[in-house]
Amino acid sequence: MFLQLSVGRRCGMGCLQRRRFFTWDTSSYDAVSLGLVIMSVTVIPRILGGLGNQLFVYAAARRLALVNNAELAIDDVSGFRYDTQYNRHYQLDHFTIPCRKATSAECLEPFSRIRRKLLRRWNRRIPFEQRSYLVQEGYEFDSRLLDLRPTKKLHLEGNWLSENYFKDVEPQIRKDLQIYPPTDTTNLACSKRISRCLAVAVHVRFFDDPAIAASASGNNTSDDYYARAVQKIETRVSGAHYFLFSDRPEVARSRIPLPDDRITLIHHNQGDENAYADLWLMSQCHHFIIANSTFSWWGAWLAVHHDKIVIAPKFEERLGGGLWDFDGLIPDLWIKL
Image (tube, rainbow, N blue to C red; front, side, top):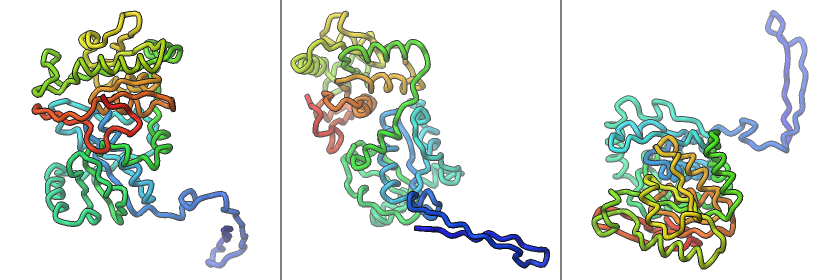
């Protein structure tokens, strides 16, 4: 395809004194790079939760925008404004995400809380494919999102906890979610140590006080799970060294039945603001024993080793409200114990 541009200079009376023609071969450019396609649809995901949940929301919204040639504008504000229980913050600035932030108007300001409540109520009454404010229904994978073809601005709210929401654009998601490495000497030294051994990342997440047993009244993954997971790794690989990640590493250490010379505690990245650094280190490991946590789910998923072994807790629904391994959460190649 060729574009021909005409350039002229006007004289004082408004007539063209000279006209020049420029011919431009556009065969090596796509329509978007030429600016010939105007993105009239904008997908606006409401980012919320901890780092693992934030990544799931982004990945699902990014795929939806890509397949619809739509713009992606990230609402990085409203999902955290009223998070008084956990005081979480937007953390995706630590990734090479190419999308812009949503404007105040796109975040439904002012009176965002009231407007969202009204939009949720109204959109429940209209067909799924016609909604302008789409709220996830339940936790299970909902294939309707894959076939959605929005024709106007679309607000997206939910957790979207499945790689099925973005599996068909996996290379692009991996490109977007490269982590900017921390620059401190402790993390860099730890990264070097991981690269020099057969590293297994182990994640222990304490949703409840460690004194509460992993039973029907608690949400912590059981000691028995970690014992069986370590045994499974030991039967499949030899000479592995384990790196333990946890919000309470000293307490978590007692759950891993290994001698001290085979395990390293990662305890220097405590706090929400340093979660990305733990994820960066975790993703460099070769094999994984994850918790019932979206954080370690992403640590394992982002790892580039094609022969990686990932062990995850199997389905549990507890009286305490914990829910894990619902439809679509655990990839087929991962091992569930």
